[in-house]
Image (tube, rainbow, N blue to C red):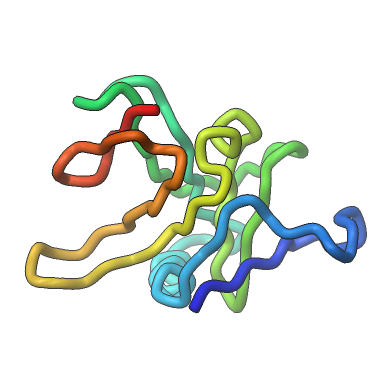
Amino acid sequence: MTDTLTLDPATAPATAVPPVALSDNAVRRVAKILAAEAPGTALRVSVEGGGCSGFQYKYDLVTEREPDDLALGRDDALVLIDPVSVQYLAGSVIDFVDDLMGQSFQIRNPNAASSCGCGVSFSL
């Protein structure tokens, strides 16, 4: 199950659905990470050029929020995405996976034509 919520409902239309979703596992993991950080810290997810497939996902802990960031949050989890990255992530689900291969955030991106084996980079 996935659930998203913009943190500023006063400025978002009542029917607005954020273009990126957080899975329940991602919400729990982000909340756990942020619990150990200073108040006001968020996880920034972005897309950059590079990686073995052309674009790569980047994850940073930040305390600054830009006015045009997409803010996704639930419970004690806050994820920020800049507008340029939102274009590449539209329709995606950010998940956290803990399996035999290890623990990692994974993005199920319907815009990616291909991705590398580790899931960190992708091409359009």
